[in-house]
Image (cartoon, each protein chain N blue to C red):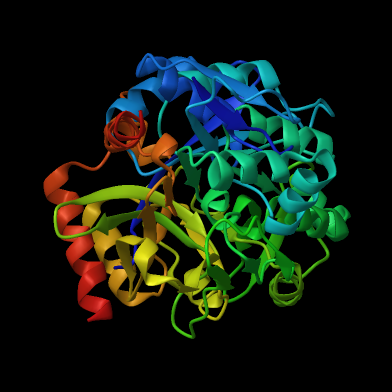
Length: 256
Length: 193
């Protein structure tokens, strides 16, 4: 079978969990260790942890926090934020993280991503890319400056082919934190990529997830707002068993 | 006592955390050492095949593992890359492995499937069928059939667990598979002891 992966995304700003909307206005959600534990207890597929200020503040990854989170949970963990050297990556793996996520360094020094793959294997290395929907075309967004990067989505796809990474997290900046539904066109752009593709942005309910599964060849999803709030109140949640069955059926129907 | 072999790159914390829960005594070794008190050796599981082999050879740990498994015939348990390292050869770096079993590690190839195989999938034999977390681009393609234990389907069936005499290994990550993983580790380690 094709594994379905639905992954809560936990955004970290220093020692706090926050939730943004279209990458802006971080709102305080809670304590990272506690939040990770809550997700872990809900038997999630995997947890994505993104430190959104490490690179901005030019600091190292917060090893202490990563260790504290990892010690509390038994689910697979991906971590991104502030990784610039092989040593830092190695340290993160040793703390109990399975996958590291690269964003800034992917653009600034693609050869670094290549080194990571050679050192740790492609299954352990992901990149995260941020895209803004600008009517019929997409521009690549730099979350550090809130400006557009010069590289195009096609150039990224070319670069990805040469790097042998295991996974790409495709973030729709325009839909992040909005609950406005998927960007199917954006997902379509990554149809030919043969590594794992995780879509993130705008996921609002099980019906739309099920639709995305049957209409695209993507089976991994990052979920932020939907699992963070109930109406306007913070309440961490996850898909229940009945809904999960519906989604697994949509996926199975595609591949029989 | 369980000995966990540290070959530079690892997620040993995830394993020791589970061993603590199971109340197992363990020791982490990163160079050859006395192994008289070692009952089961664990070869943990992330990283690149050829990098790991280089580390094992440079430190002489390869010979120690060989001694433990082939000469003293004591239990070894490999996880993901740790299991693959027991093979005679891997396409990941085109290098020779520890040669504990007659097997070759190949890259998963498929036109329709995304590689690596990542996520929760079933590992099964006639007696069991449970979900565990997988994360790999390579697998056992050609191997001596007597080792085959568990299988998994990623559209096509492949070998996800091996067991024969004192050798045992799995392609998935029990240390990352929550309750199923803890139960699995308990069974494997208790069986060995």
